[in-house]
Length: 436
Image (cartoon, rainbow, N blue to C red; front, side, top):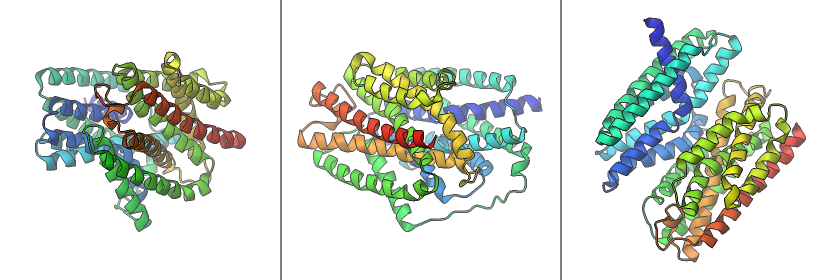
């Protein structure tokens, strides 16, 4: 019985690590959609979105072992899920959203780091019983979420989520206790601030991303849009400055990791809004499916032709400019991310200038910078347009807004954003190809 329980806990950890970004986000979004008339229920969603987007940047100040951080991310998931049960109180909603956001951001990279130690030492294997527990947990999640949605008792979903995060925490402890690498490692908490400047920039980013997410839900004045744009430009420049040291250390791998974040944001966030407004239907699940399929098939399709991944990405970006090949283009971008992901993992994990314990964390930190940078470019563009053309910025995210952008404006923005992504991808290709 103990062995079955251990296998179940480890399977739950694997599921939450792989889908931890999406599950809490979907639950909090459902909670908001069912209570749109009460703004306090938007707070958990807004805080989760913000700290999920920026959580990896916080890890630059934390030097705890990956085993400890994996347990902490699951613990944050437990506490955050239980806090959401009291989301009618803004304090609980904010705390719950922050903790779930950090859990969503941290659990996969730290799990990946721990598992890489297990594979390296051949002390952990994922077997069929683990796969079965993943499938059973996924079925349980779907059933409970359907019941909770139909009965409008979403507390059931968050109770289940708290239970699953607890199981994942126990599963993570089981795995790390079997790995000799983590035996005897100092677990005393360490927190350092590299510079006051870095902390101020990070705090400013937290506030800005929160405001950006808020302005996708509620209308604000166009003057406020302009102010956000100016602040976004300043922080974008600070982000570029923030990258100088890491570029000096691991260039051009750093460019590749940032490019990964840019492309992921282009497909998973920007394209969802753009295509939903342009085509008139909610494309979230379609794009998510396209991304997952492309991500998984990429390493298989390009196994013998990995050098083709960048040309395929550039072709995909061009195809996304046209409506009839839009989703084909996104699929090619997803194939690139899946193929490049494994190559990037190997490049970072075996890099002579990096501690292998932090290699994957650096990958996700740089991807986070790419993700946020692409968001800032997009939001700056539409806020400037909304201010000078007197267009309601909400129209870029909701096709039911009457005074939103015309199709020609939407298409013009799409060309510009795609061109920016294309230029960065082509620059990365130039330096990465030269290095390879």
